[in-house]
Length: 284
Image (tube, helix red, strand yellow):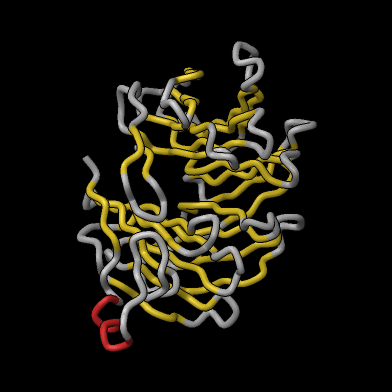
């Protein structure tokens, strides 16, 4: 389902999968969408018309999809423990394939000017793959399975959610920059484009906001009625979205009270009443 970011208004629905959708992505210009599902396919759609353009068959559930910078390729991660790269200009060609993970792939992303792939799996590792050689070139090992990966807007910082921690890594060297403990088992984390704050959510139904510089918790909101599975800042950093097992997607304002989309500036005495009032979008 595609919705307008600043208002939550429904735009359209991509219809064609025959199983639960696990992963979604838009390309940088929002002209293409990619989805991965339990029907063992990764699909690419025209995001303007909703028309299916490509369908790539896999042998198990597709958990993750992502575009490269020029929308020439998509990367998929599946429960086959494989990472694949499909060329959208030659969709019939055999995909690039990267094997070595010992568990189902949770997420895979292009990085380092699309010359590499970084992937997280249920084998407690994050691995870096060189697309030129097809080989694994670096590996990070965690005490718990990494649940989500995000690369910052400037392509410099990798954010990894694992266990009760969020860790941040330099994309070019994969050296750890910092690690922050959070109060719950966390499923997803997102770093603000200006890299001053990050948000995360997980098993305790809450959304947390932390100061990236100090690692201190700024605030937490209990708006959801189920575990939070996915969080993400908007490209302009004005909003962040959270998706939960409770069947809702919620949009939260980064700066509460700022006039933006449906959010209108409020009087100071009204602010306290609005702090815990995110916009809510019911999933059908």
